[in-house]
Structures are given as C-alpha cells and as structure tokens.
Amino acid sequence: MENSLTIADIKPDNIFVKFRDHSLIESYLANADIPEQDRSEQQCSPVPSQPLRRYYFNKADSTRVAKFDIALGDWGVASWTDKHLTESIQPVALRAPEVLIGAPWDKTTDWWNLGAVYLEGFRAIRMFSGCVPRDGPYHVKDHLAEIVDLFGPFAKTFLERGNQEIVQAVFDDEGRIKDQGPLGRPGLASETWTLGLSEEARNEFVSFLYALMKLDPAERLSTEDLLRHPWLGARK
Image (tube, rainbow, N blue to C red; front, side):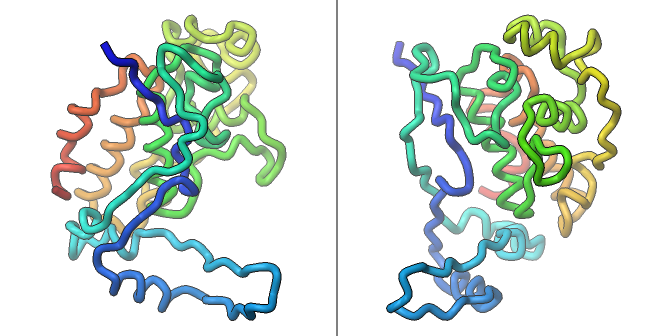
C-alpha cells in the first residue's frame, strides 16, 4: 500500500490561479488601485489583493468557479502521513486542531487548512488569528478558543490523543477552554462570514466548510464523499 502525502502548507500564498477568461483579469485590474512603478526604483509596489467573491461567487453565474485552473505550489514541508518529516506543519493561523494539541495527524489535516483558506479566498478575512488583543502576540490557547467558539467543544476521546501537558493546561472537563467565556462572534452561517450569498448558496457553502473542518480528524469525510457534496456538485 502506498504512503499518503500531506501537503501541510495550504495557504493563499501557495495557491496559483490560471484564468481561462482573460476579461476577468481586466475586470479585476480595473477595480484595483494599481500603483505606478518606475523601473529605476529598487522596491516594487505590489497590486493589492482583493477577495474573489465578486468574480466567482456571483449568484447570477454560479458556474464561474469552474472556469479557472488551480495549482498548489511550495511543497517544501509536504510529508508522508505515516512517517512525519516534522511535527511543526501548516501556517500558524491555519493549523488544524490536532496539530495545535499535539495529537496524531494524517492526510485529513489538509482538509482543515483548505476550509479556512476557502473562507479567506471568499472574503479576504481570516477565520482564526490566535491574537488577543487584535494584532497582539499569537497564543495557542487563544487560537483554540476561537476554534471552540465556532465549532464547539473538543470531544474527550479526541483530547485523550493529544499532548496531555497542552490539554490539561488549556481545556476543562467539558472540552472547552479554561477561564474563557464566549467570544461573541457570529456563527459561520451569518452574513458576517458569508456576505452577499443567497440563503441556499450560504447553507451549501457553510455545510461544505463544516464537512471539511470537523474537529476530530477521525470524523472527517473521505475525498470521494467530499466530492459528492452539494456545494461542489452545483458547480460541476
């Protein structure tokens, strides 16, 4: 049986998009504030990024998302799932729960990464930051608190597989974060996260995120089952 590979570094910087319809590039640039660049200048001024929502999540043309090709780059930290090259994987703000608590991880850890990146590509906002206060230093406990706030408490059976020093320091007996009340953030199905989508499109999109981002990796769906999800089926 062949070993499975985990990419372990899915983030916007490593996702490359090839537009089949070049007019979409023109419409993107037409709405962007393009800085003037003098060739003699040593420092380049990048074109600011914009969310793809207005171009590919248009309810009037739901097939647009299927009209570009995607490639993943920078496989420098990819690892065999049964022979880890390192345990420090994934961009910090996109790390899966099992990585954060030091539990075993496998190829499904990429699904968590992908779910968070889907939302970031859609709205250009991050689902998690691990920073309290805003723009402050990163804390694993704060990151886990953000996860619990959106996805609920961690199951005891899952926490038992984690690093017990981390688990005992962070979680209470109910799988919630010690000394941490509700963060008050709206649920994923709210317009805060899915602005501009119809109710049907919102429900399908959020359902797909929840399918990708199950807390316990043992409960995550197979690739085949994910491909059968209505949100993907509607865009074939």
